[in-house]
Amino acid sequence: MLASLKALSLFALLTLGAAAEAACARPYVVLGSPGGLNLYIEDGRAAGFLPALAAEVSRRSGCVLTVEVVPPERLIAMADVGKADLLGNVSRGNSKPADRDFVDITVLEVEMVLDARSEIRSLDQFAATPGALLGRMRRGAETPALRQYFARIDPARIDVSEDADTLARKLAAGHIQAFFGTPLFYLGSVQLAGMGGRIRALPLGGEPYRIGWSMLHATVAAADRRLISQTIEAMRREGAVQRLLAAQLAGGDGRAQALPAAAR
Image (tube, rainbow, N blue to C red; front, top):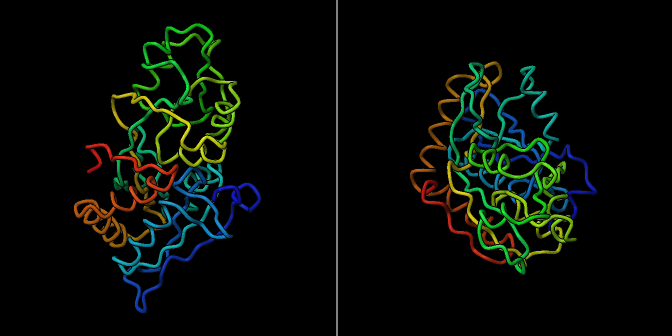
């Protein structure tokens, strides 16, 4: 399903609904970076949780929203120079920039991913296992609990990769024994690596990974930011966001993934 991502341009556009009389001042672009089941290219079109979510926000709000798939570095650069409208399903982070509004989408529990045949049964056991290599993403967003866990591991046992796909391939090949991720993002990578159904996950605990939409003041009108925020908040209260997320996770590797309580 996701293999076409490698062969296609990362600059694909998907128009997500157009009301006869749009409720927002103008059409807006939701930027997203490819990753896992959140966003990928299938049959030349953007697919995954973010496009499904944007389509529903568009339908409910009457705003015309378009998803544009861009590399993470370009997404950050465009936002930094005010050349972006909305950043979709990005990390909340520790800071609250004054030039944009942030509306929560959901929280995602962080898990240690291992080969199903691994004899390691706990995070403490992994930390105490000499020679067990732990994969780490070079520029990945990390929760405080995850940073604390990495600090427990001998640096010689940490193998750094550029993306989740590479981590999953290394796990499949036995080059590393585990890596961390959230199901929304790692399930797609595990599937690409041919490990669908052959993994086991251990919960990290601590603060979950929070994602949301970031809306820039310079490009998105204040009234439109309020409308989009209110639409998303209503969807969260009604359980619509969680249903969209569960639908993506259920198809990720043939198993349903229960939502964390904090996301319900």
